[in-house]
Length: 179
Length: 399
Image 1 (tube, rainbow over the protein chains, first blue to last red):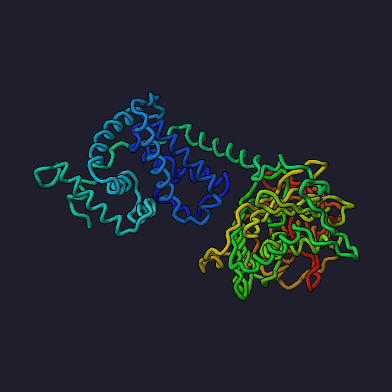
Image 2: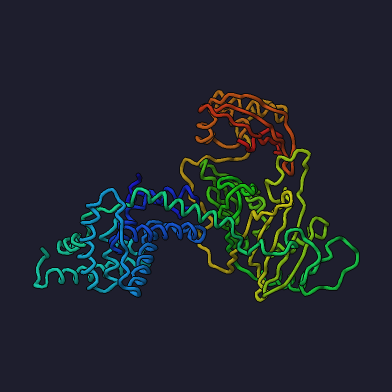
């Protein structure tokens, strides 16, 4: 398998074979990102699958996108936002999940972590939380996060600092470094 | 350097468990993409199948259709509203600064821009044209790009890492050339129709003016090897659509007809006018080790070959011996691409047939059967031509 973080995808893939390589290289990091956003593996995989199909559908239009990886994160982030909005309109419709990975224990632990992380991020402004999610849940650089969010790099950096500062206070309301 | 507190907070937000996609995920995604690809190829943007037959065969009778007097008759008929609209279209398009066209063609990704085939999947294609003085353009599909920067044209074929330069008029884009001048495309088509080469129908409906031009396949088909392998060598209909308000060309669909079956082989559905193009559009970043194809057989001639069959035999013999300098005697380029060396080096010739001509191709096709080093056999036709200034026989394709 190609390590996604070391893979530089120069241009938007145009053929089915190109897409196969893209999926192989990026599926794990995108599913992980969607998992921590949506809280379960099945929804995460559905969301990422939707994104790949959309990426294929738009391949001509996106032909000159050079930052393919961060752009995929952007699409996954948007898709997750849509799903979360739909969930909030129909509360109580929690998906019953069958864990489909080889490592069931990881998924269970990860789900518990998700609850804690989500609770903290919900308490800071969404645009700051977005930056922190992308920095913490993927290997994207600030420049790539900027592409993923369609924002300037200095803006992304300042949102990151503000967000981290707020989280630091939430974790340790009495001051000092978080334990 | 990160503030320690900042780093610690970030680490707290970083999950300790790595989540991976499930084992079957990639397969599911690729199946969904394949389904999407099938769906794309079966849906016509303009709902072609629901259109009346006139579009595909140029039939005369139609509700709003006006059959133009395309045959070279001496007397002019009164101008129809359709003709007036077309004239306005030509006028409107003469004010265009740039056009950016996206579409798709049934072809093989890395192959030339001429090749089409009903059996192939659609491959995306994009065209940019700037009406500066001198004009500039770029045509691109996966595996092949041509840029013309106003001074010269550059073709780059990524699959074999090979490039070639030529004049602005070099035939690198083949059949697509007319699309680089959409403002005159209708004039050109109507001129061809006036010479008796096409039947034309024009209609206006729902804010769209449509011009459909039907042409018979051109070329000599005593041997039909090239029949239906390119648009000019097929019985085909080009359907141009113009926005009736702006008068600008907004779509082109090409349908070829084989044994009564019509198949869309090319469609250009998105025409964007007056976009600002970046300067970088007219350059291609070439790898340092690119193979320059500097015209046919750049090495000084060391052999004298009499005819296409002898050239084919010499070519295969050179490949069999892996004598790459000899291969370059009959092939353009500064070196034999590694892909060709790998695939064809050490081959064995099983048979070489008699050369024949077909369609519009200015050279000959030489049938052959060879056994490759991996044990497989390949049967195909080598394209060989000598219409260069030195009249040297060179291998033009077919392997």
